[in-house]
Length: 361
Length: 103
Image 1 (tube, chains in turn purple, yellow):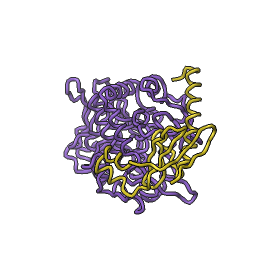
Image 2 (image 1 turned 135 degrees about the vertical axis):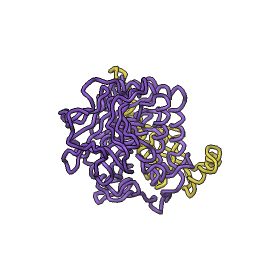
Image 3 (image 1 turned 45 degrees about the vertical axis):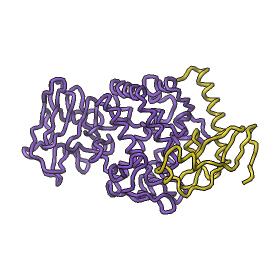
Image 4 (image 1 turned 180 degrees about the horizontal axis):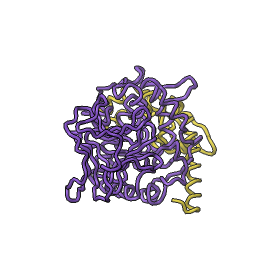
């Protein structure tokens, strides 16, 4: 586990092609239709306008992503940030990406058709992120009378796309998954800065006051408690929310990870792990020579390793072992470079792999 | 209740009392769905141009149409008007896309 969900704009052509191919396989197997049917069945019965809105859709995306990964283990769901990507002429809707599904799957998209149709703005998202409690975050009305995330940020893209995306069968449109991945990322981001994953409360008592340990509709053996810690329990992370690699995290070719300030990034490309500034100035790389590595993993003992899965051979490693619990790979601290693998109190592993970055591994 | 009928942009909108909704829910979802629908208001049937339009009522009391599911309104007739506007605009956009050759 340890998949990175990232903005579709950061996907390589191959990654886009793999994602699209996996979607067609799931459509042919009836999986896409089945998920849409489940969503429609519960649409007004508690998966919207209750505290379970976010955890229910997180569980749904997780289950759908597992289905995608049965087809192609390298695939994860990308997200569509509709505040930045807000035009029908965006690459999102290109024929080689989501555009092809409109005719192939008869989705009837009609961008901007809904009355007062608009997409959320960055300002709305930033204001929503400042809300202090879970309830105010997802549904509450603020002093200006603005709704919370569900109505003001989640609903508009459904309406803006139109067609099937505007119906209760919206998961028939792959745009649903990219949109909800973004919504889930916004929740993940909010969780990270508002008391962590435990910040969850039941719906207001006048509504269905389903709480942390109440069963999710359809999947009654699951509750919000099973999904709120998405990284630990569901094994994925977001490119711009989770700023480090933790034990078990995997980078596949073209995966990247930004540091908290966005000044630095970790990039896995052409079998080489590179640490660089966001404007592409290379600070360190795992090896000079081109390797055939196609999977970079932070192993449970603290060893960072690159594998060539075609022959199950390790092509590079950091040789850091015997890590304490809660260790992780870090890129910066207080806006300055602090690149290496550290324990929970910031102590370097032994032997240290935390000196100022060398030119090569 | 007495049926309510009005015209909007050349379309008729009608609300009338509905029967047999609970039986429909039982047939569709069984006990779990009945738990989720407890305490709901009496259902009304919505017709546009004499054709039934399926809808649901969200836990906060607002309405959503199945074919226009993300515009949540407290008044079902207002929602029907918005749906008519959406449907016409969507048709117009699709026609333009087809004539323009866009996917």
